Image (cartoon, rainbow, N blue to C red; front, side):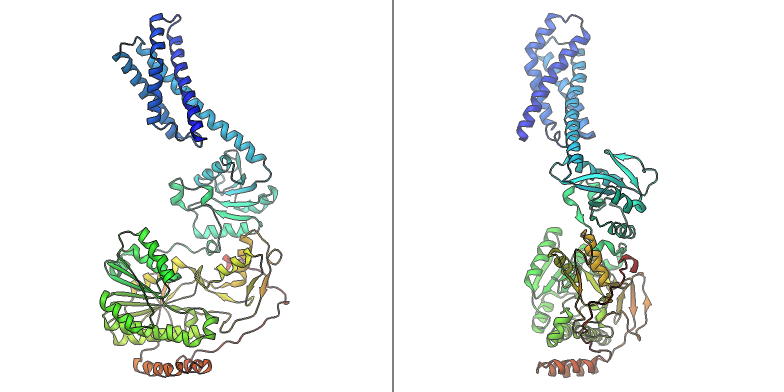
Length: 628
């Protein structure tokens, strides 16, 4: 089909070139001298061939059928001028009698005709498709938010892509100057305050946010307004894709809960981070996991001397290995399989590679599973961290950063208590080691392994119900890249012994997350998708905390990173308690293990599972962003 189109256009161009010369003769001579006209008839094939060859060289047959632009216009003009000059030179070389003024006027006329046909095809195509798009009732009626370059680009593609199911009918923009104006025949009907009304009046099916430079706060506000319409929400890529002309319909994505958080971009102290990562051997344990893999991505930016990914699960490690090799081909990357439980394996690795910075993201994190297998949580989280810390001390690691959790504060489950013991290990080791041991504590990250969001999405895809454990349960949330960036930044502030606490914003109700996710799918909570309350799981508590009462907070140079005071420094006592805990593990008795943990972590109080009355009145929904 494409070859047929090009062949058709070549024929049209040959016709246009010859008509251009005939017009040129007619404009100059009332009665064309026979000598000139005979010369033209003799040379017409050669002239046409010269024009067509130059048109091919200038690639005029590559872009006509989809888009026309200023670049194409300039190429058409340039190709005609070049072909006219070549034809004149050829004629005079072979003794042609066609006057130079005929060639000049012919170039002008040929440019007008060849360009005219191209514009005609463009206008015809757009007109026919526009009529088809606007009158096809099976296409989604779309409201585009943003009348700038991003919105304009997307609307043009909607109107010129017959195979896509979009019909743009309204534009929203906060600029009062743009109100009432049109882009490609689509009118700017109002600002963000008019979204609900216009969506109802125009029977909108899909709302597309097309403002690539939109900051997180405004994005969250607009999404919250759009959620009330019941329309499906989508968003175009960021500013980079727009600047490179890549904002196409196939790059649009659904609005996600992550977009609702409204968290601004993290500003990092690149110099401080670079000082302890650049040209250093950096090791990330659990490097294939959600946080670990993102740490590897962020670390790679700072060009370490070598990046070592250490993980027990080879599939995840393999995935991040391939990704980093592709994105950072010059990165000196080593991927090693093993467990932090295996101290001999750790010593072999530390002796051979001599890491200077260690990030420990290896841990069992799933609360209910660890309640059923508390011994495994202790073996992996506690004694794995102890193995790693002692090995780091032995082999002279400069800085050791452990990933902790808000569940370590006044823990109600084994997982949280095990991470609290890890914090104690870090603080106690720092007092007897030249290695700078620190921990970084934060809450849940959206999209991580075990996060509620992937689970909710699967439940919605199956038609529901969405299950959650309590209507009032709240959690702190942040994005995976945000958490990893702040962990690396906290490492730059480390002096030893600190527990860095990340600013997680305000806690968010899981119930609100569930309703938001349903609405973002264009569905109605508890009508299209049921929200079912099942009761608290073993070890689960309603509210998480980020700080123990005795820790206090100190500010750092970063407004999202704080320091909790060291609360445990007795390494000898810690080792005695760990030896007792190890002895209890051998019996694999759940109650004995939990009692032993309580001896080490006085703030550990077991939570009990609570079955709830699902027929109680539903709480009034609060917008997710309002609580951030």
